[in-house]
Length: 351
Image 1 (tube, rainbow, N blue to C red):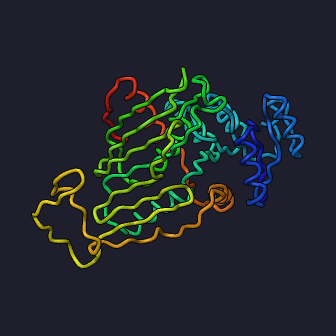
Image 2: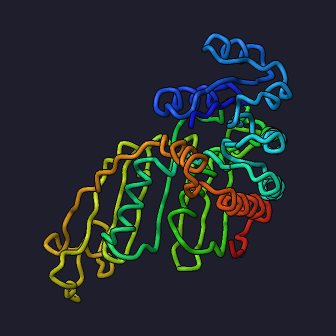
Image 3: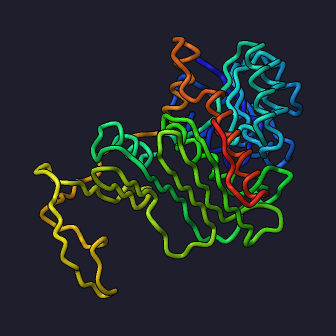
């Protein structure tokens, strides 16, 4: 079946979606666009899209069965609910809402209407994330207990409307929502505590350099770090497991795995080891012959899989991959992140 999609908010991300779908998914035609800005309307017209002058015009268009909401975050709830009530299937850019309460209202309407409602969490298909996922699923280095996930840059500030609190700007709602979604998708256990250190180094309104600490019920500790002012980057991923360590340096998936050899545990001597920093037993380096280095698994992945799943749900009753209930868990964690920063201490939970 051929589907026609209209985009609400034809800015940078709206244009990205249009090109992604146009070039990689023949089952969906990007048909039209609505935006309150004249320059965005002109751009949509130049690219051959039907330009809607009002939201009502889009909602009444029976040619359109899918609507993508790609506006600043504070407009998501209103647009999503109106589109669902008009009988449209809805995809919403992340973060789907400003808080968990807004999302609960959106989910209620989606259930009332019976229409598809999903959130564009495209970074579940990032190659670096799929690589970490494969290492765990294949039990390559045993059971995880500490995972570090970082996105670091040096731009020095949030961009455009993301620098304004009223629009739902800031790093937590920009990159944080992606990394939290990955964490909750990766670790199949409830979150039992949230602690956040949010800094506003270059902004008077929003967080721009952050560290978030999650503890899961199964014992996994998870550190998320995002910075706009880092000039020496740490690895994108560093994962400690019972039988080894995995490191992914960057989005190109440079990195390695170091694991114990299969010839049994090393019998440690009690002799003191003398290092440049002085004597130590605890931090004595492990002998090279007791470990082996493995390459990272080679993973092929593309976020067009998100849209392929949407088509599968609509045409073949496939199971939806990115579910609103999963996004609600993410938003509940985000609510606690802001509460933790305000209180200046960790928050216990069961999410």
